[in-house]
View 1 (tube, helix red, strand yellow):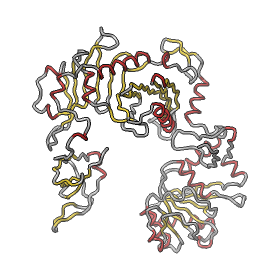
View 2 (tube, helix red, strand yellow):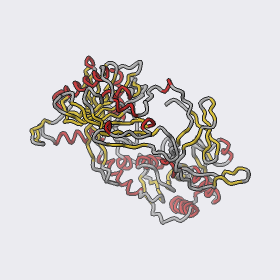
View 3 (cartoon, helix red, strand yellow):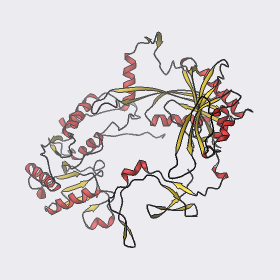
View 4 (cartoon, one colour):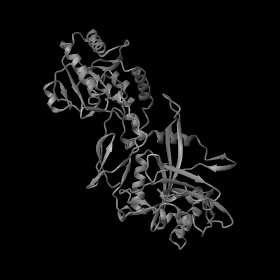
Length: 553
């Protein structure tokens, strides 16, 4: 936005590695400890909590602890916030407090308006005299009422930032007098220890100017590095954004994916929006873009915490690279992290190039020998193999299988004559779903990499044809709009969500088909289509009539 923005925040940190886009000249921070000393905010005290065996005991403990400090709850000027983890817990605890003659309301987005006549709200009420407010997320931020001075955790929050936000609801101190807020934690999360860590972090981060963790860490690391270091048998210069020269600095694997460009594709827009996405994903990058040649390079740096640590941190710095080449009819895209912008309307890209075209990169022209093929079975049977991989010195010299004509090739690999050096043979891999080409040679310079892409383009557009071997297998239909899309069978693969499926009681003519809570095991679900109307396909699923709608991906 062109307009200026003023940001006031009590939690100047995020759940990702991003910083805030703030001009450092206009940055000011008041630490929590200093705010308490100035009586702007209340101090916080965690009360000892014994193990609680039931919700009734929790409610009793909360009321007793409050009344030890502030006297009778009904007559007090102060109120209680209780945090639960779901709507049902909120309802139950609210009714328990009410049964103890305590005025109480429950707040959750799932509560409907008709429950207002009871004590349940879908939104935080602007005015309500209840002494206890029970919620899940509705009271973690956005409420400013200094009468809340007591907080009880019935269940844990999702992250530590939410904890600080939740505590923020009970530390308002408009009277500017010394005051304390109190917390009961029965969530088994040791929130008192997390609060101590926060206080130290708040003190130590006073001068960080809201920079991201990545910026701070990489700035510090670079300051500790010499301009030149002796590494891997060479004196090497430290990489900076100013001295990054892709044509001299880079060595790249021969890998790319060929993507079809959308009708309104614009390379400049593609590069701009890709850079914005990288920033959203916490990458710091050096970009070099030669618009006249249709070439772009992003050298990316990202940080992450060690996967082996629970409460401590040790940061990893990861280097990755994205190389883009606009080859008129195609867009070549390589990301060492594996991302691929297929069918992305925002970036203007379409699908991968047709698989029958990609197969031309394994042809008699480059003396290709296919040594490995992975296939998916198009014959949907209860006992049929879903996929398989075969390997041989030469697949073409093996005896065909009887069902080869029903197998769809997903990828193929073999040897070819190297385009950059005709005296050498190279191993090449083709992944047809993603238009992927990989060649397992030594890394090359950026100049040789772009030369390799040009040679691949010539092969795709030239007169060479794919190896006759590919005719053994099912023909790939790259444009589904040219065929009849009415299926005879539908294969449902529910194995990934099998543990999450809960059954309800279903009866038919007095016969129980499904038992409530019964576990279900799906060995296979290849189902016949009974009828079709307007892209709806009627099937029988677990003896239950169901329909599936076909939608464009």
